Length: 177
Image (cartoon, rainbow, N blue to C red; front, side, top):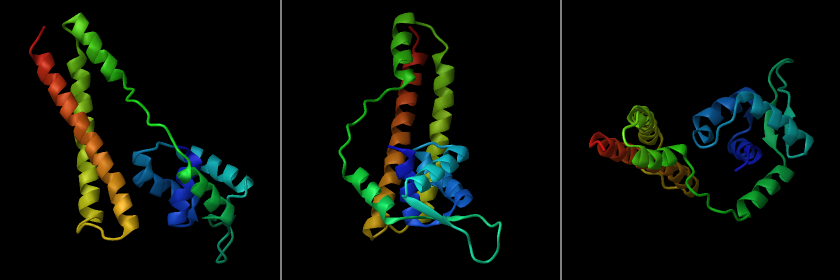
């Protein structure tokens, strides 16, 4: 995934200022694709130079933030990107190798890191479940809302998977070697 496409998606959902975009990004796509506010502002400039978005000054007064909106070329680029094929990425996480290493080393301090990870994934799961209860109860009926809910459910399943993995690994490590 690329940051420009994530920003185009957010701006198509709702044109807004850069600061509002960064805030919305943190509360939605930011759960799945990390970007600093500086990266977002730099990318907005690049997208404008490429003719994919435009920023307009509000008519009310000078000095107010520009409101960004997607131009037809930006919509076409996002459509091209969505329709492009992509390869599935393999799981690549350091903890998997560390678990294998613990298998050959015997007694390690890996459990402390796993407990920290477990706490993190439980907190994220609680946050996602809160969003689901707030934004998707009752279950959405429209296609666009169902797709947004599906992305959230993927996050819920991801966090649940990590919770299960960390819990099982901690149980195995507690058995000793």
